[in-house]
Length: 252
Image (cartoon, rainbow, N blue to C red; front, side, top):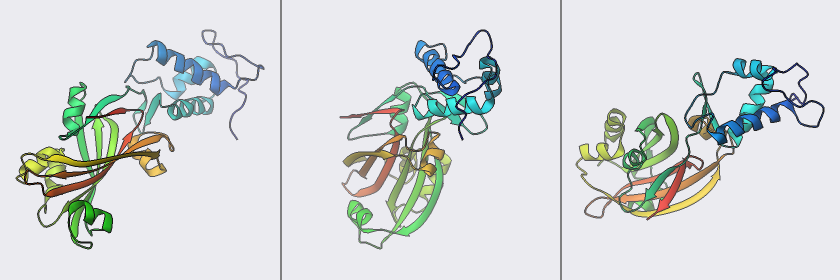
């Protein structure tokens, strides 16, 4: 059961109200939220450790953990396994137009972009993928799951489908180059454009939340898209999941 009252004496510089119907963890969450809002805890900065916060507020670490979880649910902080808890850096403007490039959008916002390959496999195209790529259901496609970061913070993850055999080995190029655009260039695609885009929203599953360093249920923006080469041939169908607290989609 959650810690509803912490009777440990608090430190003099950060007194908690006792016996007034306010739980200790909520007071801590509100105090840290105010510090984030005032810039005392700057965007991208690391919060003190649970032990340090417990000492500051005169509570146990379970109470601090509950407060941090509340801040994560509000989208104010993110907890990174093995590294600590960080203040969220705010939304990145993310234009979606005829030439949408993750690296360019993130770099334009003054952040460093990187893509990581999570999984790659050959699968038969289902009906939706076949229609998007202009192939027959059951035709082989390369399916990749990727994770995209800005300054190390996960921004989005995507499930990408490419027709085979045209893009055989694409996953190796992507894993090495960490960029869809550069991987396409290595496959002879110097330019490509967006044929269609659909945007929706839903909550993050537990698995998606773990990969994106967010709390389960946090809002995700779903962007389904199809890209074509210079000859108008479909080369990629993807479904991307963006952290709604970290990007602002701008449809051009």
